[in-house]
Length: 191
Image 1 (cartoon, rainbow, N blue to C red):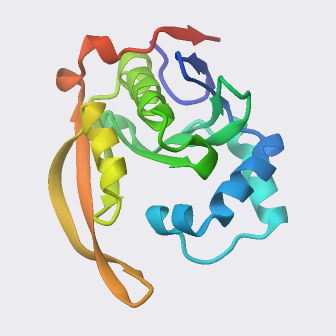
Image 2: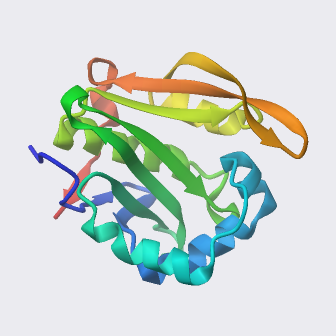
């Protein structure tokens, strides 16, 4: 069992490959974040300079308290998003999960498979007990994908996001190791 996030795996599914994020992924992720719908669904306010974003991507491989993986569409070979385990709490064996899928990767099950792969790694290889996430009320497609992966709604953060003058609730969801269905485990993990 891996004891922290220093090891950056490559996780392979039928539809996607999750591999360590690096600076070379900047153009694909910047294009995804330039999509107004993606920015809205992730609740992303403001802009990050290219220099700052590239530096952030350059340092992901050095982080031992989080795992940032690029989502590569196996059909096209293109990076379509990122999957992240962060806010790691080692004493409580828990962390947060977030995912971003650009328009080129939406509607084909890539996000569902990427979620299953990274959750399977977190529970099966890191030994996490609990993985949580937040999803905004105006993103029912993402909520359904999380539910397919086994996440359960556990609470509501009322008026958590102010978006274009409207307050939006955030649904808090989680999955526990005891709820993880063996069929969701990743098929291929290479190191």
